[in-house]
Image (tube, rainbow, N blue to C red; front, side, top):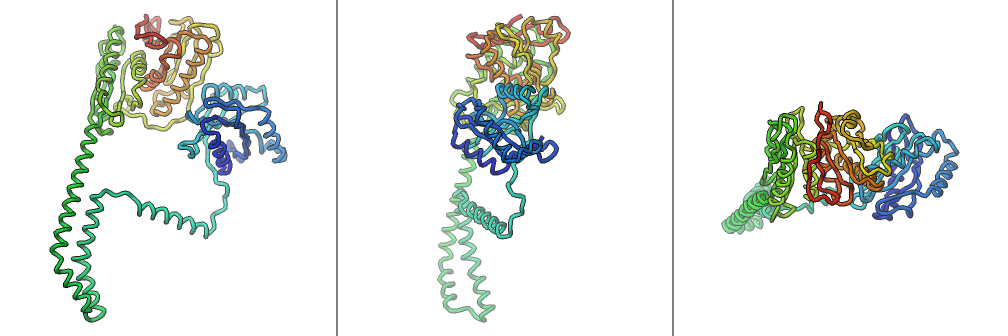
Length: 525
C-alpha cells in the first residue's frame, strides 16, 4: 500500500509539531482513494491538548466533528473520500508503533466499529524541523504491514521558464557562496598564494610584454621601466616565496603528524565471544581493522570448554563473562569517550550472549557484528530497517500469575512441544513477521524490536508477573541487543534458557540474570 502525503499537509503537520515541542499530539487522517492500494491524504485533525511527553489518546468527539465536516466538504462521496486512519507524534522515540499503539489499532479494526482497515502514521521532527514519518497498515486478522509514504508536491504543472531561471540563479548564488566561504587549511592558502605570486612575477610580465609587442608593434616605455624595476626585485621575491613555501610544507607535515597522533589515541575495543564450535572462523579484530581507524584492543571471551554444538559445565562460563566485563572497564580507563569505540561480535550460546549484553548495557554505543554463515565472514549490521514487527499473543491470559514463559521467535519458530516438555506456566509469544535467519542485518531494526520486547516485559510487570522464563530463537547479535535493553531495576526476574535439540526437557538449564535485585548470575537447572 502507498500513501501520498501532499506538501501542504506536511507543512501543516510540521507547524503543529513545532508548537507542541516535546509533547505528543495527533488525530485522524482523511484521504482520497486514487488507485489500487494507493491513497492520498487530503486532510487531518489535530488534538494539541490531550497528549503528554510519552503518550497520546485522542478526544473522540473533536475528531468525529472533523470527520463530519470532511464528508460535508467532499459531498459525502464515501467511496472516494473517507476515513484513512490515525496519526500521532513520537517526539522522543522512533517513528514506529509502540506496543500500546499496536493494541489500540488492533482494537480499532476488530470489526465492531465498522472499520475494516486503518493506517497508523507516526511522525517526528529531527533537529526541530526535518519531518520524518513511518506508517503501518492494520487489517483485522492480519499482522501490521509497513506502508510506503510518498511526499507529493502540490502542483503537477511544470514550472514556468521564469521560475526555472530563478531557481537556477538561486542555486548558482548558493553554490558560489559555499565555494567562496569554504574552509581551507592555512598551508594550502599559503602555497596557492605563493605560487600565484611567482607565476605573476616570472611568467605574466614577459607574456604581457610579448602581447603588447604583437598588437602595438613596440612595448611602451612605462611598461619597460616597470619590468626593469620588477626584475631588480626578483631575488627578494624568490627568497620570500621560497621561505613561505617551506613554512607551508612544514605546516602540512605537522598536520599529517597531528592526524596520525590523533588516530593513534583512538582505541577500538573488540569483544569477541567464542563457544558454539571449536573453530569459530577468522578473528573478529581482523575484520574490524579493515573498517575502523585506531588502536585495536582485542578482548576474547573463549567459552569453548564444551562438546561441539552442545554446552557442558555452564557454571564455569559465568565467571569468565564477569571477568570479560572487568577487562573492558579496565581498557576504558583514562580514555576520552570521543576516542573510544566498542565493537561486539560472538558465537556463544543464548544465555551467555544475553548475560554479556546485560553486563555491557551501560557501555554506551556498541558497534555490532555477526557471523554470516553464507559468506563465512564477520559482517556489520548496516542494512536498512524493513519495518517488520513482533506479533504478540497470549499476553491477555497472564493476569494474576506470578511466572510466565516468553517465547521470542526471531529467526526460527519455537515448537510448542519443546515448551511443554520444560514449563507449566502460561506462554506469551513474540513472533517476528516473516521469520528468517537472514533478516537481522539492521542495527536500527534490532533496536526497535528490542524496544518492543522491553514494552512487553514492562506490561507483564504491570500485570503482576514476578519472573519471566525467556526462550529465544534469534541470531547472536539480536540476543545481545535484547540483553542490553532489559532494565536491571524495574522489570521482573529473568531466566534465559539454553535449547538442546533431542533432549527432554528441551530447555535443560538457564541463567538467572543479575536483574530485579539479584546481585549475580546463577545457573538454574
